[in-house]
Length: 127
Image (tube, rainbow, N blue to C red; front, side):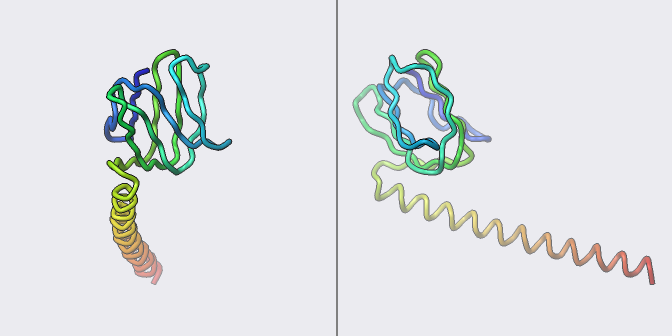
């Protein structure tokens, strides 16, 4: 099979694989080369695949969609963090969430300033 894992801004994985394991809305599943074609939504969780070198690679993924058609497997997710081992993956995910939290706080602060400025403008126009 050939796996292509995509984020909105980049191609994360684009390589041949022996099998794919993921978590869908109905639970965990594994895809092998002769598996029936499938389209399924993914839930946030672990995504794993076995490379042709028989190495298992783990990724933490956000919600997304998996499509298997013939020998091609396409996965589209909002976020994906790759780790060599589950321990390092957990640390990488925590670090990324911390960065996202900081960005969200800055965005909320900027939005509050914008709203305040807009209210002041309306008061000045009406007064």
